Image: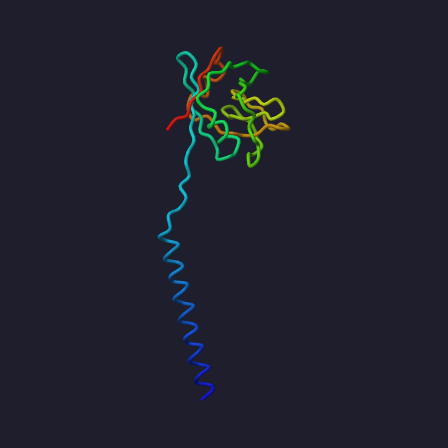
Length: 152
């Protein structure tokens, strides 16, 4: 008699656990997934437009929050243009950059955003914000005041 009761209780427990797992799986399928938003910005100078796709980092999000901007672009070295956003960016959760032509980066020690038109590599304090998707060959021609805005 005890053996039958034990067997009956075991079978009931197995059915209950099985039903719970099926319900959990069904709920996971119907729960909406968090949608990734793609952040894109455009840099405009005279007749030139350059488009960047930003990564999901804190630094990229903070740059986006400061837009639109009209800022002076400066030459730096032989492979980059730089500008200074009004507020410094937080680099928490922002990947270190291995900069190539088309990389958009943030140089934390000086607080400037860097648009690379030539390869650079890695540097202490250099964080990646995104990459060019259009106009890579035009970055080196930027001069004077640029307008930076979000794209929807």
